[in-house]
Image (tube, rainbow, N blue to C red; front, side):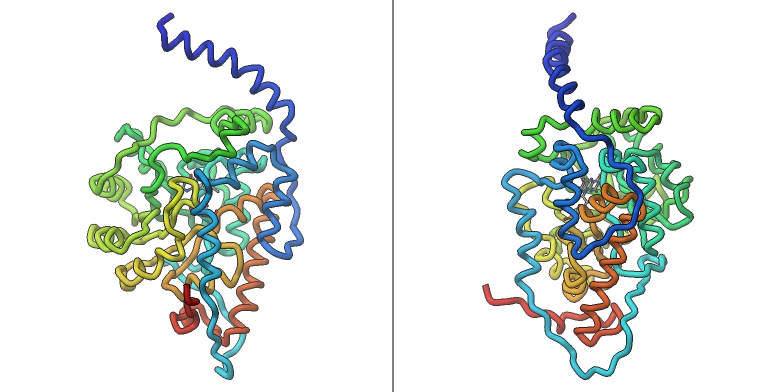
Length: 383
Ligand code: FNR
C-alpha cells in the first residue's frame, strides 16, 4: 500500500466510528407531506432545524466564514424604504409574469440547490412538484440527489438545469446533452462556486454532504447515485461558449455581481443574468446581492432578463428587488426548509405565503402589475 492509500485507510478507520455515531444520532430523514401554516417564511428556518439532523441543518443554513455576506444579504433590504402610489385607482394585483417565454404565476422561482436528498425523502422530485403546483419554475441543481431524467419526469412543467462545470469536457457535454434531451429549457451556468464553501458550522459538525446523500438514498431504498467527476475550479469565457454550443439552449450566467461582467456576458450571447452571491455560501465578504443588482440591471439595459437571488425571505423583498431592476427573483433556503417540513405540499405553502405577501405589498403600494414596479417605488436610506 502506498503512502496515500495508507493515509486514506487510516483516516477512514478513524472516521468510521465517528460517522457511525453521527448516523445514530441523526433523526430519520424527513418524509412528511402536508401543507404548512406559515406566518412568515423566516420562521421556516427554526422549524426545519427541529426535523433535520444537526449536520444537514448546518449544511443548508450556514454560509462561508464569518457569514458577513449572509447578514449583508438581509441588511441590504433594510436599507430601502418604499414610496407608495396612493390614489392610483388600480385594481387587484396581478403578479403573473413571463420569463424567457415561460409564464409564471409570480415573479419568484426556485433556486438550484444541491443535496436536497438530506432535506426530504422526495428530494428534488418533491421540490419540482411543489414548485410546479405553485405555477413557477425550478432550476435543478447540478449537485441534485436525483437524476436529470427523474427530475424532468417529475412534472410536465418547464425546468432549467444548473451546471457545475466538470473538469472533464466529455462529462460536461454528456450532462448538457442529457439535460437538453430531457426537455430542460435553459442552462444556468454557475460561475461562483470555485471549490467547496468554507462553512465553519458544517466543519464543526463533521458533516459531509456526499456520504449523507448516499445514506439518505439507502434509507429511502434507492440505488446509489452515479459518481460525479471533479468540478472545474478555474473558469473562463471559453467555458460559457462550450455550454452554449454543447447545450444548444439559452444560457443564464449565475453569480454575476458586477456590471462589467454582465455587459460582457450579454455581448457573448448570455440569455440571462443571475445576480447572486450563492446565498453567502462561497466567498464571505462578497457584497449583498441586492446592492450588486442596480448597476448590473443598468448595464444589461433590458437586453436579457435579470434574475436576482440571495436573501429573499418576504414579499416585500421581492418588491424591492423588482424595483431595483430584477425581472424575477429566485428563492433558496426558505424553499428547502419548506420541503423538509412538508414535502411538495410544504413548498406549495411557502409559495402561497409569498403570493399573499406580494398581494399585500402591491395593494398597499398602489401597483397592480409587476411590470409597473419601478425605481420610483424605493428610496435608499441615508448611510
Ligand atoms: C445552494 N445554492 C446552489 N447554487 C447553485 O448554483 N448550485 C447548487 O448546487 C447550489 N446548492 C445549494 C445548496 C443549498 C443547501 C443552498 C442553501 C444553496 C445557491 C442557491 O442557488 C442560491 O444562490 C441561494 O440559496 C440564494 O440565497 P438564499 O435565498 O438561500 O438566501
